[in-house]
Image (tube, rainbow, N blue to C red; front, side, top):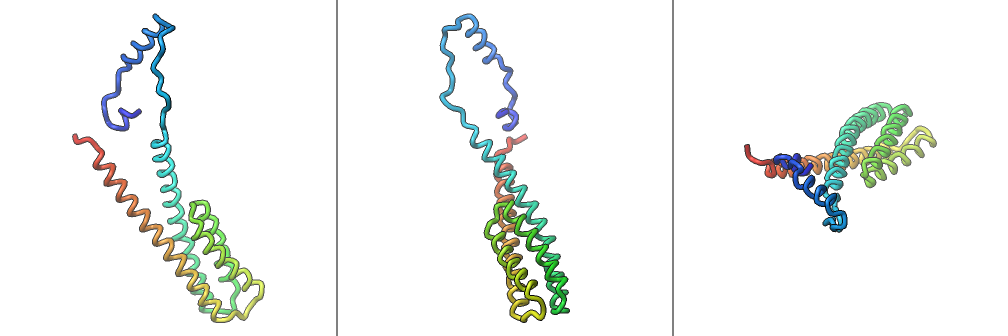
Length: 173
């Protein structure tokens, strides 16, 4: 597998076949067995790749959810007595919270949870809601948007670094 990954010729296996023949002819001979085999690097690469893919999916989902939240905020600003936009934002925040936590973005998930709790309490109290609540929700939305943008920038810079590293390790044709 290492030869295939490195774009090198695949070994014929003759050395292994010769070792097996030697062992069959002399079973008492001690085979040289490595004391340990480390597969950690391959596992780490696979784990990092899976995590990056999950984060990419989460960022796409977060974009859609935050667009929905922005729309709900606009509807709520236009009709502050209307409870429907609050329900929409609660649904968005609940979904965003779960996605963030699944993607390992605990702080973002906690921020969405806190905003969800605030809106849930306000929904239970009912209209009229104070202007300060709208401003708090707007600030919470802005903070969520900023965190998702930072996550996107971080993923983009990691992608640039890994593609530059893989291009440098490619053998020349």
